[in-house]
Length: 412
Image (cartoon, rainbow, N blue to C red; front, side, top):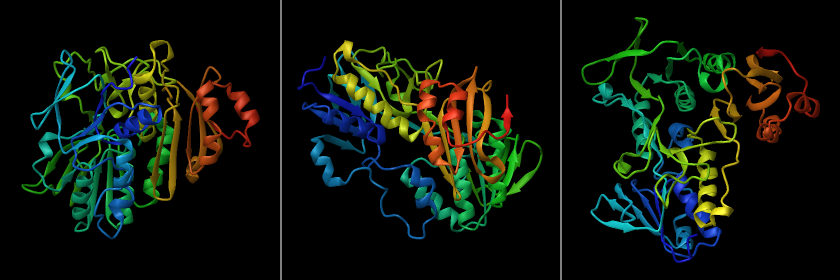
């Protein structure tokens, strides 16, 4: 168990890194605490980058900070921004930074998160964007304001939000998705079809079940050639095809990596004294049968709370992650929300509202037990499902206790 004087180093100064630092102090850690971040900005809120900041008239002067600058002093941090971690040397319990310095640690928390997945063959086009950082947002804003048409490749949460933002700016928008429906892996085909219809109802040209074959244009991307042979003339392309965990600096350290950093249910890696939180963590989440990496905003805080506790706890006092995964997305005037981790074999019942009206609550169950729930524009009914998802409550009991009446069965 670490003593109060032990030095905790957190590599990654974004949401999960900051939340880990805050929780460590709240739990009574009084020893040295170092927070290292590659970006020059202190931790900021990323969801607005694809929502309000993208479409507001006035260009933002700074990203939306998660903690006021003067409040950092209360954490008594050694805050090192604008410097990248280059290597982990576990035998010396040290981290090598890009400026040539080394930081020794007693306990290390990996919070380096993820970076946008790119298509190398497209990167020479200056009007092809990814959206992950504040600078990405500024560059995309500038291009969108000089554009007539936007093409978004990938109809997940980020792609859907960018498409909605394009429509809010008055652009023609084409949304391309290789799967049969937006968010199909999460919502299933029929609920995902409801998301596709939401975009179509707002004037988006939605192309499903087709991949991008190539981009045309010598300098700027002027055409998007799809696998079915159709061509989309465009001014701006946004690539929203997921992310890659930022773990290259851990090569050769002994930390096990597989689309992220592998850890146990306590957030500890196979290397003594090294833990992981946030987007980089491949962890066993409630409702999952195997460890997986989640990019949800709430997961960053949930994993930070667990790891901060376990860094300070005696082995017999460690706690596993128990918070049910949750995500949300604001698209147009609709809030899309999800609780839990569904599987393709789950039965899906719409228990309130109507998918076609973009206002519904759907419950996923297996063998009569609730596993997940999704909603559009029904935040309160969804919130009432949280305990049922966490406990695996019998579907019949949830329906009997809830103030709604089962509607149609979507799939079985």
